Amino acid sequence: MREKKVSLKDIAKEVGVSTALVSYVLNGLAKEKRVGKEVVDKINKAARELNYQPNQIARSLRKGSTNTLGLIVADISNPFFAQLARVIEDEAAKNNYTVVFGSSDENCKKSESLIDTLLNRQVDGLIVAPTEGCTEHIISLAKREVPIVLFDRYLPELSTSHVVLNNYQATYSAVEHFLLKGFTKIKLVAYKSAMIHMQERIRGYKEAMVTHGLARNSVVKEVRYNHIKSDMEKIFNEIENENDTDAVLFATNALSLEGLYAIRKKNMRVPEDIGVIGFDGHEAFDFFNPALTYIQQPMDEMGKESVRILIEQIKGSKKIVQVVLKSELIERGSCG
Image: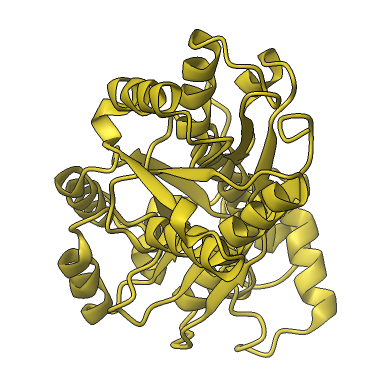
């Protein structure tokens, strides 16, 4: 026999108040309706003890809210985004929100389709890692006043809330670390992308090389997103044949991992033949010896700030909040 579902009337009877008063409290209107703290506490206590489960569909229709957030990452198979998604999900849960996920795979059309799908499911707001070519779609969301926070990368032409890394400083500092260790012929391996986070990593590298009088050694090798393996093999064939490189800085963890495989395949010794710094950690790095020195992004802070800012927007804030976080260089053995 199905157990009878607890109603507002049951709670009202338990506490000795009206059903309307219970409704005010459980729908977050106690302050507005000037319900005393003692009564609020009694109603909430009775709701817990009776195991009251609100009808979320009915509540969302009344409040115009579903208590769900939409999250679109660039590549869920990337440990960086997988870990960020977990942080965001946990932080959302602390604020009584659930998260619906999607992965754009750095594809603009897929990203736009995912955004539209999430909005049709009536999510209260979006946290998005934008893809190349999707600017107009994001602008249209902003014009419609859809609560949205961009993370990991942002759109310079659009004034919207975002939480990102200081990518310029991250690669600038990595170059200086190489120099402290005696490396001077440093190449950067980056994705072929016009997105601001990648361009800032390239800019940081180039300006560090120029500042330290090494402009002639400044070389950026670009890799196509869907051709990582073949492009990386080509790059390391060139490095091996030209003998003009003593260190490599990788601009993402996926590039770092593929680069380490290429280095192993060439039987290059790290750091004796080539120094290496990666971007973000990866559990696969533990299988390489020596361990990889890498740039660590503050993922917990990035995820928590994204959720905090979005919830403030959902509650009615019109303030544009733009957070730029600092990275940390995790020094291990790949630079000597």
